[in-house]
Image (cartoon, rainbow, N blue to C red):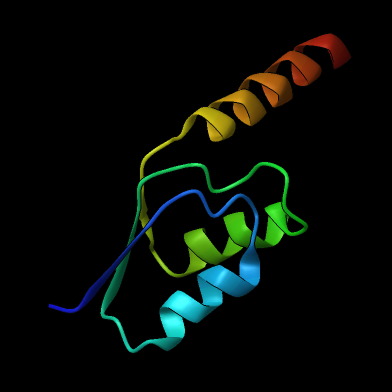
Length: 75
């Protein structure tokens, strides 16, 4: 099985798409999918739609905690 092992994408959609274009059968992500890059929503959508196996990194965890706090504040 040809697998791309990636990490620290930090919302860099072109880099993620490039990994897929290499003809791999699967992409495994060791975390930090989002962060300071330009495409956080698109990267999350790509990961979901392409069944990328992912671990939550520290940047990902910060975003999840922020969204949770914001949702609780709105209620």
